[in-house]
Length: 193
Image 1 (cartoon, rainbow, N blue to C red):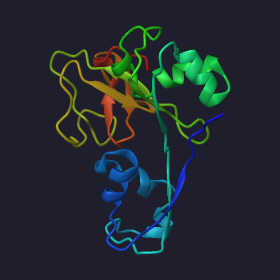
Image 2: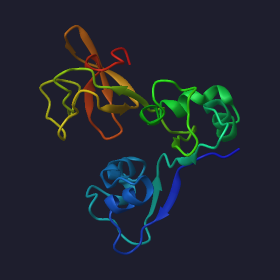
Image 3: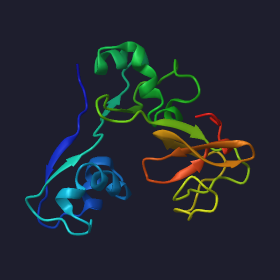
Image 4: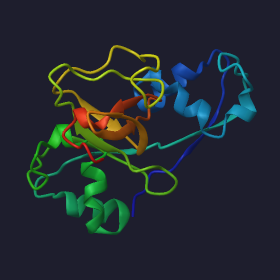
């Protein structure tokens, strides 16, 4: 049974956290995940100062699987987890937008991200439905600082937990993203998480 696990990485001369994040995730802006995952004690208070020889744990290193003819999400989950009933974890982990609304219809050649089961939060996706889009916030309130540019209607967002925050139009639920921002779930197709 194949399974993705956190990786151990030895810092090399010239490395930066954003460079390491680019290598592992294909996205340098995810350096916070590495810093916040048991590595603050090793690195210290300045994430820009990492030293050759330091050992860093890289969280949520996932597998990438290319769909083969005749495969289903159930079969892929069976192969990776030994339990086909765990297929929703693959579908809801940044793959919904690739697969589309019907999880029973996957096409050969499509690359799917396979999340690790142990220690990693289950990541869910939702689509922005608010016609004005959604701001990314530093805290689950509309008065907190904006983070980045926000997301227009139709964007797919990911989140690993639902938190209680400021009530907006009768809904107090906010998504907490892996990128360390919050967004109001009432403006998405999953208003209850």
